[in-house]
Image 1 (cartoon, one colour):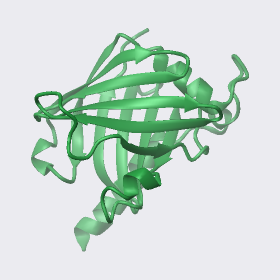
Image 2 (tube, rainbow, N blue to C red):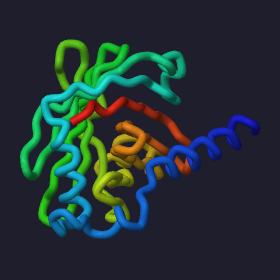
Image 3 (spheres, rainbow, N blue to C red):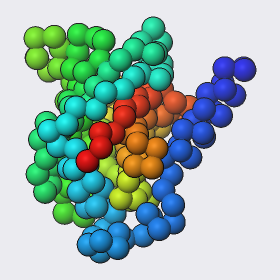
Length: 188
């Protein structure tokens, strides 16, 4: 029971740490673009960069907590950002963010050590449109929830906190953090 309460408190703390200020939740003043487009622009600033960080939590593989990991910003266009993750496991995951009309889609392209598609791949969801130019939340879409029974309440958050100099990727289920990766932003 204590673990459950700790998990809930940790989720609240980390989600609040990524929460934008009211100014961020409005359209950005620089270019008056909607938050999702500004978010993609902010991610694109790191294209070609490798962000070093660590695994803070991994529900499926708790032994990875504290392990080093990297986010490699490989491809950035106006409508797509691809971020390869490198962490201590055989699989590779490419986080694909795609702006489609007025929606922002997140997918996970999971590959095994031989770069063949993983058993579960191309899952994700659309932004819930409550995000800011620095943070977006993606509840699992039915193409993800159908893959794994019991994952219907999953969501992913990507957060860029320039003040703290951090990039975070957080996976939650029913307000409990399942995975949390945090990397240091480079000086631009």
